[in-house]
Image (cartoon, rainbow, N blue to C red; front, top):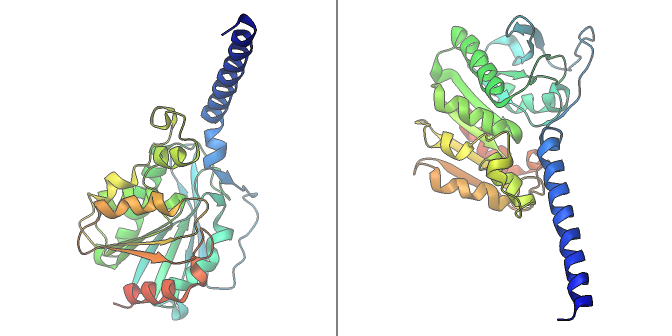
Length: 272
């Protein structure tokens, strides 16, 4: 190889290394913005929903407050409560419509906003997300026995729900479009980077599910472009023989609620 070709090769190697390092640094420092997409609203603005609800502020510490909305079934007679941990976008307002899936069966639905979402204020970290989920459970357990509590997670919230289920008794755990872990999810998008070391959030859903003694049901669509089906499918190997992984053919990350199979299976879980 002549010196000219060596110079060209060396130049391209430097460009590739610079691009790799620059992109990796950006991914590391911007991962919080990649993972979370909150929409905050003024705390003096009242929520408005077309169903019976109640809003509460839960003091978490001296500076942080959790905003919680409780949706009630018709007649305000409850057979239990669903602790609903929502996805990574906007706030409770985006997910309130899904409460009807549970209130029609006589369940209350408690939705919290994570720090920085909606009216919730304070610092956000993996540990804090877990601690706030446990606080929500503790409050629910004052009113309901564990066999009347359903833990539900959607998208980002599936890992938080799985953690809570591993550390608290409940009737069942239901996950909609879950991920194996955050590093595994990052690896699906950027496999050339050491995602395990780079990810500041781990949220190891796979490990938590192995600690859940009661029934687990997972819903995932084959056309999910946010959390690829192949990532969620890995969770099958950690499920108990009595658990269920329900595949929605053609389902995406955002439209499982439009499928008859989703409602048929979910209804069957909540009717008894």
